[in-house]
Length: 103
Image 1 (cartoon, one colour):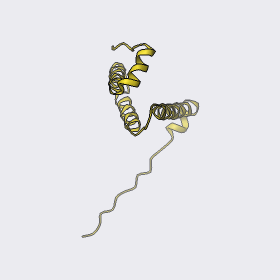
Image 2 (cartoon, helix red, strand yellow):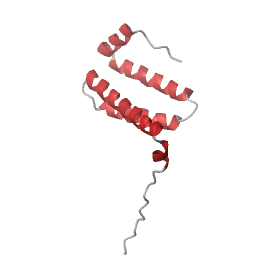
Image 3 (cartoon, one colour):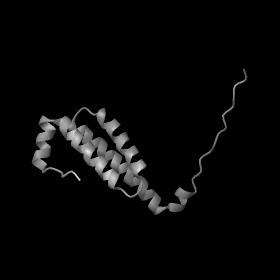
Image 4 (cartoon, one colour):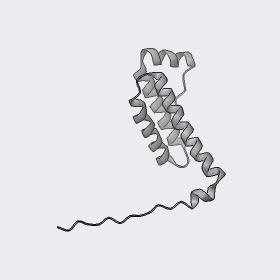
């Protein structure tokens, strides 16, 4: 697995070579997902969603806030499921049949 550089190196990359820092982040994320025993597809989806949201950020602080919000929302959803698993299991989607238009 790729070794995470020290804080000072990461700070320098953020200030001088943000594209290299972004590649490092993606590499580490991909390695971590590949080492996961389960939920790899879900982790890839979350990572893709995060990257899409971060691409719209205007500065590093905005990226940090967006990441924290996403993590908080995921932890909140997990806590809800852990606190009340029956409520989660009992959720059913309503299937609405599509009607074909007459020609």
